[in-house]
Image 1 (spheres, rainbow, N blue to C red):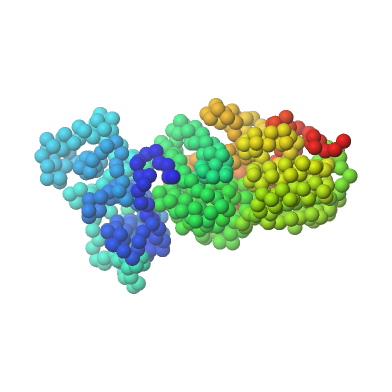
Image 2: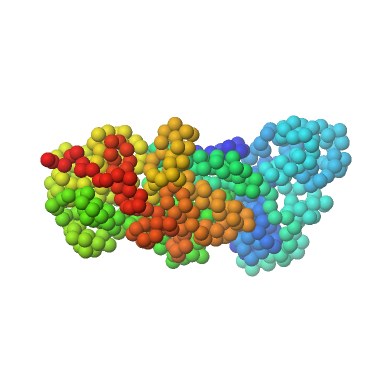
Length: 602
């Protein structure tokens, strides 16, 4: 379900079109381009073409009245002449505050500075009738003056196009410019979703107004149903906490930030496509997500939408995609180090624990059991080389494990082989717990080293004492220092439960990263400027330091990718001790020494 606290559009049909620099359609979503539906909205698309010929970056949100007098809430944004223009709209939209269409007409004209008499003349109404409408608007908007009502209209995009009564007198406003019909040559028509080739476009028109302000929309694709709903709920809660703190300080330049979340099934490519298309249809100012089974689906929609997209998919394949094609994917950022650090991190941690005397083992054997995850790469080849140099033998590697019985069988098999340690390569709690229970039925003196899944609080609840002694690693984990403790305490006060030690922290940091970039950019809607701000500087968050200076625009791993912790995120290894998450690696973030697991014989 799409959540939006500002307007009742939950069931409205969302549409998006993107025009290139010549006014030709390059993207169409949610629209039957071959049917009457397209023809009924051609005037709105023509208006977007008109906006695309204006000089300079600009944006505007407004209500559009179609020929059948239905209203759509639309947003047009453009980088100026020579850049692309996007148009999104929601059909059957209802203005907030109980404002009627007639009152919306009056409010639009008030925003243009017209007197009651001038409004009456345009609307073919009496001055007394207009005065009544104005009084009702003041009551509904809870303001005292016409000027205040006009300010609310501009701030909250309570404006109607075409301008009621014509554009005369509005020539210096963007509303008026867009409401003025084109002279020769006429805009190209839509034919089967494309522009008729060879049709000339109108000349560039200078822009006299930059934008109409509205809340900054942060679009998130976090699951709230299904097997990782608890994880998604943590992401939403942490995001909302950061947004609440930001808005309490005045937002971004006086504009509040709102979270718009769409539920999805992270393992279903169709669900991912639907969720991201819906967010793009809402014309959100930035996109965020956790981890997805088919991340490239989200990348392609984000590339078309154009807004900054900050994801935590932990996929080196996606980092390479950005590095190889920055023109298309240059506004996409991976806010955690890649999955290729997991295998090397496993070997590095065990070597450090062994060499420091914390891990006593006579076995030189290591094992990795990896689950099914599209596009994933745990860096096993590099781990094999590292293990050999460190005196280990990574001699049992199983890939593509899927299904409860397969995970149970691997748990039994590893117990029989008795390596010094095994990396359980799954991000999901049920797969990890199945392996652990099966192994512990007849255990060996082997360290169990999981990935990410134990960060979710439910894991420890369901496993109970069986979780004691388990190690788990994450490419992005919440530290235990003062910065992180303040976040953990705030989260606990807000939601009455502690956050997990991974994605809650990264969701919180992500909002703060975007806030910093929005504040530094020319406008939150200037996506190029926002992305450029994200590329520069280092942000210290509760999950470490974020730097996107590399060509792939992904966070760095400490100590695996850089020895400098001030520009990177520690590859944290936790151990569950007395039902608490304790960092045992790497230095200087350790807070406890490794404990020998209770399942070790003798």
